[in-house]
Image (cartoon, rainbow, N blue to C red; front, side, top):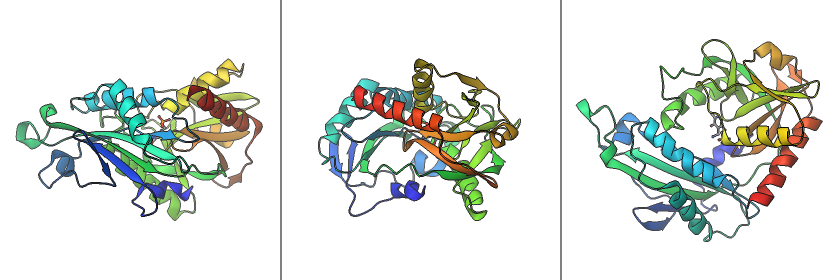
Length: 294
Ligand code: PMP
């Protein structure tokens, strides 16, 4: 899944950014050296997708970025409905031939006591839309990371915040060094949490299992959607604490996330696996939902 590198600027892929009331073509410079975001990392974001003319769960992604802002001590200045309306307005400027990544963000310009906490009164907002093709769900490989997810006591884990991602980044880099695409990251007590980029599920004897949200990882919007769709279709989905051994013994493993939706795992450690029927059921159910949701 090399497509995650496509988040960088690319001349042939279009980008539009809304900031301070205006749409700009491309990726305008927004923060200076004195910005709290540049210095101490007070950024939050969310990610949604527009493909085949649909933007599933855009309302939930817009609501979540405002919750993330509050969790980081920022002041969400744009109502969720307004973020959604802005995104739809901005999407009108795209041809629709290439899928778009929808990324609302907040950050602080100034700090409070000794400059350290973000000053909520200096919160800024931008909405960046950029062409990023959907990937073919060819599957990816995972290996258990030596790095762990922080607890809610040690990091603002309930925010989708930029400050959490250097940890995910080093987990992925370490996995790549050992020949894997992505990392399977555990929480501090050794339960499986998520991958470096997505939530994780496995299937055993027709039952779907996924880690129960315990505050140490993102309870993803795609995760919640897929659980709901599978249950509606009559499939049993169990949310509980899960170990690496549970995953090693699985019939199928797949992941969920807004970027690539539902994608199969084709190798865990030394064990090769094929995309299975429950993975296909989950992906098809998600795509059918997306088409209907608009
Ligand atoms: N976990 C991590 C670390 C992620 O980066 C993402 C995707 N942003 C997810 C899970 C999936 O969350 P969602 O379905 O809300 O995109």
